[in-house]
Amino acid sequence: MTASRRPLIAGNWKMNGKTADGVALASGVAEKMKAAGDVSFDLLVCPPFTLVSRVGDAIKGSGVMLGGQDCHTAPSGAHTGDTSAEMLADLGCGCEIVGHSERRTNHKESDELVLAKAEAAHANGLVAIICIGETESQRDAGKTLDVNGSQVAGSVPAGSTAKNTVVAYEPVWAIGTGRTPTNDEVQEVHAFIRAELVKKVGADEAGAMRILYGGSMKPGNAKELIALEDVDGGLIGGASLKADDFWAIAQASV
Ligand code: 13P
Image (tube, rainbow, N blue to C red; front, side):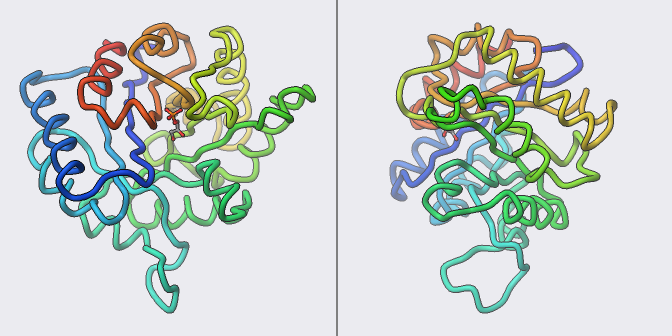
């Protein structure tokens, strides 16, 4: 964390939540935000598509931001089951996750496709949260920096800015496992990602761009992770499903 970059605490609900519990969770987060008044961080919830509209209503006026978890590259058309960035913007989303490792793995999403999705987000005024990260076998083979470097090169659109883009480093082996890299390892990868971003978007934008850590971030480890120089917040899965835990992580950035 560095004073010049405002922390972003983002909750990725993944495929979790039906109407009642999703609205209750969103309302719980919104109440804490309202009670806190002025805060020094940005807070974002990314519910599943089915709940975007209802969650948007529940957080209205609280300062909590709304985001999607994925989008199609086209604005509209014959794409059964897909949702466009334009549709997300229409529902009040300001951000959108693209290239999450679960989509890269389960839906065979390539860097090229992720880049096109980020461009679709940008074209619709959305902040693209572009996810990258190595698998356990890539890490064991000593390829962590290579993999993250090539994902930055391939997934981040040229001309991205600190205003319209956030990068989330999520080591695949740390997602949902309770395991995390050491603080030194996290800082090393984040600093490397920022250096790679310099090549892509220039020093000014790369210096201002937020790089989030994701993968088993919890109330118990958030403070030390977010305190690292090049960690500008978190992309949180499991712990974002409890308002108290999510809020405790946000407080760890203060
Ligand atoms: P967990 O916080 O459950 O490890 O998930 C991280 C993640 O994938 C967020 O996008």
